[in-house]
Image (cartoon, one colour):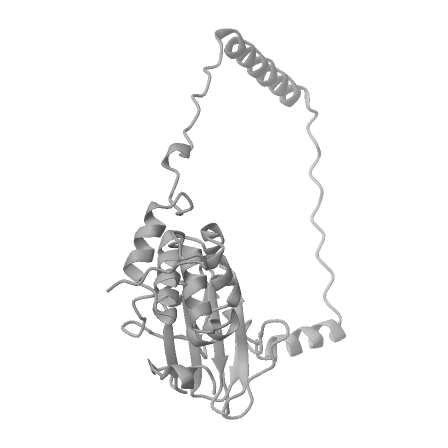
Length: 276
C-alpha cells in the first residue's frame, strides 16, 4: 500500500519535495546521510526537496534522482513520478522557441548596377596600369654564400638527433607522471556527473560533482574503484586505451566499477567502489 506523508496537523503533503523531506525526517536521516548512501552530492537532494528541478538538468536525470531518493527514504517512486510529471516545475523542452532562419532581402537592382560599375572601373584601371608599367631589366642571379663549417656541423647534429614524439611525456597541468605499478586514467564529461575514484590502497584520487564539457586525469595503483552518477555521459581511457563499461550501467544511470591494470572494467560492490 502506498504511504502518503502528512504534516504535523495530519494534512496530506502534496508536493514531491515535501513528501521526500517528511519521509527522510520520519526515519531520522539527514541530507548528508542519504547523500552518502546514494553516492550523490547533497546539493542534488537539496534541489529535489526544494523542487528546483531545473538545477538537475534534463528530465531523465530528474526522474532518476527522484526514484532513487524515494526508494532510500521509503516513499513510493511511482506516486512521486506522477506528482513530478503533473507539476508546473517539470523540465520539458520548449518546442515553441525553435529558431527560424530569417528571409534574406534581395539586393535591389540599383545596388547591383552600382557593383557592376565599380567592377568595370577596377578592371579598366588594372589594364591601364599593366600596359603603362615600364619593363624592368633582368638582374643577374648571384650564388648564395656557402654555409660556414660551424653552421653545417650544427645542422648535421640536429638532423642526427632522434625526433621526440609530441605525446612523449605530455601530461596535463598539475598531473604527475605515473609511478611504478601505477596507471593513468583519463575522464571526459559530456554532461554533469558525480564521480568518486580510489586506487587499490584506498587512496581517494577524485571526488565531487563535475560539470559537462570538463576533463580530468589522474594516476593510481590498479585496480581503480570508480563510482559514476551519470555513467553514460563519461568516457574513460586507461593508459590511452578506451575502457568499455557497456552492461555495467544501472537503470538509474549510475555505475560502480573496478578497472584492472589491463583496462578491463567489472562490476564492483558499492562499498568497495566507494573506496572504503
